Each structure stands twice: as structure tokens, then as C-alpha cells.
Amino acid sequence: MDSDSLHRLLVEVSKGAISPDEALGELRDLPFRALGSFANFDTHRHLRSGFPEVIYGPGKTVDQLVQLLEVGDARSAPILATRIAPEVAAAVRTRLPEVAYHPVPRMLVKGAAPAPTGRGTIAVLSAGTSDLPVAEEAALTAELAGNRVVRVVDVGVAGLHRLLAHRNAVESAEIVVVVAGMDGALPTVVAGLFCRPVIAVPTSVGYGASFGGIAPLLTMLNACAAGIAVVNIDNGFGAGRIASLLNREPRTHAVTTAEAQMAPR
Image 1 (cartoon, rainbow, N blue to C red):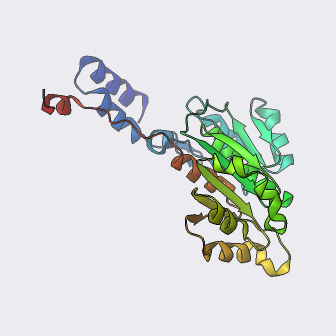
Image 2 (tube, rainbow, N blue to C red):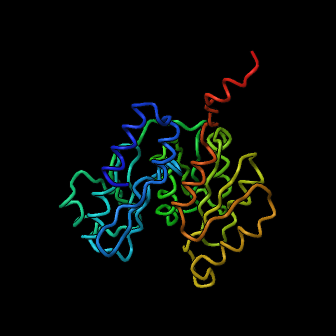
Image 3 (tube, rainbow, N blue to C red):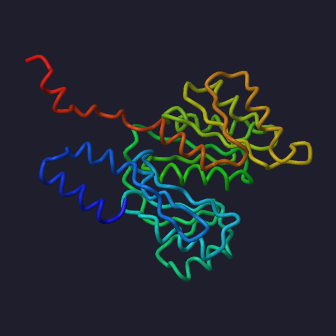
């Protein structure tokens, strides 16, 4: 939608020719922003899905990342760029100093985290210290989507007493994200002990027979405890988004004019 079309839409709303809800419907279908020959940035994804388009960093140049971050509107929600190497982040921040870098999850963030609006807390559990980059990617993604997040670290099944020491934190959470490599058994244990939805995240952490995360992935897919959903290997971002969607406050039903006229009096 170009500026002329947007001006026409606003004039029609001001004149009462179309309703604000109808105008919002048109805005949801706004096209992307073309950036030369390398990207089409979806500028209004947050209107449709509740969260802006996220930039996947690997394979992109510094110039491309800068242009994508510049075009992203962080007023409604922060703009994220994931899997950014430290040297790439440093180069980006020399040109965009307002963009923050989080080195553990390797994420660039444009904009501030909103106040929490989720109905409960999301607990992010990591089996081992080596799983922290993926776990922190999930935790930060959930926080930037407006959730309260509690982190529970290094509670793998090789020392089950460590998990039980955090029983209250897990029991008080609405959703639990469990990040584990090696044998990938922690999500099964958590789902067997706590009555909470579990989002399992296999990581590529482990020795040769873990096959870069295939072994924990298969363990999680074959878990004998019910209530476990599994995302892809190392996909902390995906787990954070799913947890955020599950933790949303129920949407209130907007009563239209037609519905109001039909309602019994």
C-alpha cells in the first residue's frame, strides 16, 4: 500500500465511509517492503501474528542486516535478529548503536521489551551449561514478546536432585520450556513430575553418537510422558514463540455494530 492508498483509507475512515475495523482489515494485508534484490521485509506481520518478522542472521551481510533492522518498526514490539556472531554484531552496532546485542543467545534487539502481559510465567529449564545459548534464545524471545520468564539452569537428569530443588518455580509456571542435549531425557522427567505443558528443545550438544542433536530429538519425540511438544534442534526461538502464544491472555470478543443490534434487550 503506497502513501496515496493509505491517505485514501484514512479519509474514508474520517468520513465514516468504512469502519475502523474494516480499515484495520485492509492494513493487515499491507504488502512487504522491498529492499533491493535481497529481501522483502514483512512490515505488518505483527498485525496478523502479534509479533514482527524476525531476521535470521546466518548468510546475511552486515549491510543487509543493517537495512533490515532499519526498516523494522520497533514501536509495537522489538525487532530481533538471531544467530548473530559477535564480530558481525559489533560491525552492525557501529552503524546502529541503538541496537542491543545479547552475546549468550547471539541476538540483536532493536527496541525495548514491553511490559509483561501474559497470563502466567514461562519457565525455561536448561539441562546443562552448554545448553544455555539455546535456552537463553527461548527465554529472551519470550520476554521480548511480553512474558514473565524464570530461568532454571543446569538441572539435567544426571543429578535429578538439582531439578527438585526448583520444584516451586516449575510448579508456579504456566508453561515450561525444557532445553537438553546429550540423551535428551529431561523433558520426559519434567512432564512426568509436573502438570504443565512442556515444550522440548533438543540441542546439538553431545558426543559423537548424539549425531548433532538427532539422538535427543528422537528421545523427545518418543517420550513416554504425555503433554510434550517438540521443536527442531537448537530452535530456542521457535520454543519461545510457541510458549508466548500459549501464555497469551484470552482474546476479548469485540462486539460489532451488527451484533449489538441483534443482541437481546
